[in-house]
Length: 605
Image 1 (tube, rainbow, N blue to C red):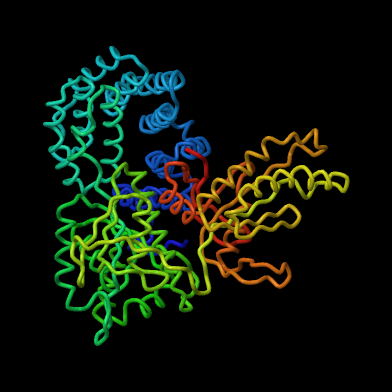
Image 2 (image 1 turned 90 degrees about the horizontal axis):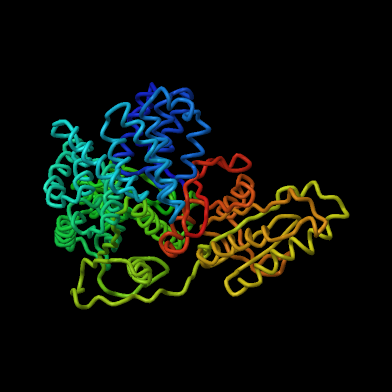
C-alpha cells in the first residue's frame, strides 16, 4: 500500500519547520505518519536533537515501545538527558511503558525504577509533568503512601496557568483521582476539554491522558465510566455507501436521494463524537461522508483502490463534473491519502473490495493507538450484493467482526428492514491473498556435506509446520532456501508465520550437523494477485506486482522475526486483533530498490 498526498504546503526549510510539521500529525493522532515525517527531517538535519526527541516520542505514544527504546539509544539521546530535562523525561516515559507492559513483581520493580527517574527530575525542576507521573508510578509499584504524598505536592505547587494550558488541567485531574477526590476531578474535566479545543484540538494528548487516567482509576478501584463520556478520545468511523447513479440511469442511490442522505449523515455525526473517518471517495455516499467529516473539522483518511486519475474516470466523473470538483476538494483537505495498490484497474472490481478491507483495518488499527471506539457507518438500501464489491459486502464483513455499526437507510430501505448481506462468490482476474516469503540466513555458506541435513532437518521442520496448515494454504513452493506460501486467510498466515519461527528455534542445529548461524526470516503481505495455472509446476500459482512486493520484505527482515506490511497489519487488526499485535518498526527500505514500506513486527498478544 502506498501513501500519497503531501500534507506540507512547502518543504520545511529548517529543523524547527520540520518539528512544526510533525506537530500537525501528532495533534491529530496520526502518530506513525508524524514519526515518518520526523525521520524525513532528520535525513536533512541529522543533528537536530529535538527532531530526534519527537521521532521517539511519536513511537512511544503509538505504543511501539521496543522500537522507541532502540531509536532512543541509536540516536544518542541517552547521552543528552543529563543536559536536557525533556529528554530525561522521555527516557522515564519509556521506562514507564516498559513497566506497564510487564506483570506482577516485574511490573512493580520496573515501576519503581521509572518512578525514581521521574521523581529525580521533579526534585530538580519542580515541573508538574514528571511529578504527577512519579505519583502514579508509585501507586503502580504498590507504594501508596509515597503516591499520595507526591500527588499532594504536585497539586499544591500547580500555578494558575493559562486558560489554554490543557496539560495543567489534565495534571490536576490526575492528582485529584490519585487523592480520591472524584468530585474535584470531574469538575475539572470540562475545563480540560475546553483548553484542548482552544489549543487546536490535540487528539494525541487526549488519548495519552485518557490512557493514564484509566490506569489511575483501575488502581484506585474506580469505574472508568466516571470520565469516559467527556474525556475519551473522539471516535473513529469507517464509512461506506452506495455510488451515485449517473444522470439518466437507474441505481441504488439516485441524485434525488442526496439531500435526505446528507441530512441523515449530518445528524448521525452531530450526535456522536467522531474525530476521524476512514473510507474511499467514490461519487455518492463516500463524498457525502467526507464532506460532513471535514465540515466538523474531523480528520479524513482516504484509501483509493488504484491510481487516482483512473479512479476519477471510473468512480467519480460518471456522476457529473460537479462531483469531480467535490472529490478534488476532499482530496486536498484529507489528512492522509493511501492507495491500496498502484496497479491499474483493468475492470477488476476486486480492487474495490481490497480497498474497503484495508480501510476497515486502518480504522480499527487507529483505535488501538488512540484508545477510542470504532464504528462502521453505511449508507445502504438493504439489498444484497450484486457483484464482488460494494456496500452490502462491507456491511456483512463488518458484522462478521462483531463491531458496532450504524445503517443510514436510503432508497426503499426502512430501519427495520436491515438484513445481513451474504458475500457473493469471487469472480474476475485478481484475488486478495496473504503471502509469506521466507529464507534462511547463512544458507549460501553451507557446503555440500551440510546440504542434505539442511533439507531433511530444517526444511523437514518447515514442511511439518506447513502440513498442519494444508487446509488453509492455496499454494506453497520452495527453491534453495526460499519459501513462498499463499493463504486465503490473513489470520492463518500470521499463525503459520509465527509457528515457522517457533519450529526453527526448537531445532538442535549442532545435533543436525548444521552451523549455529542459520536463522529464518519471514515477511508477510496482503494484496491482490493473479491466480493462474503454472505450466511448469502444473498447478495454480500466484503472480503480480504484490507478489513481487511481498518478496522484497523478507530480505530486510531481521532473523528470527516476522515483518508484515501495513495492509497485512491492518487486516489482521480488523480480523484477529485480540490474538495478534503488530508493532511499528518504521519506514523500511525494501530489497532491490523496490521502495520504502511501512513495516510492522508481528507477534502474539
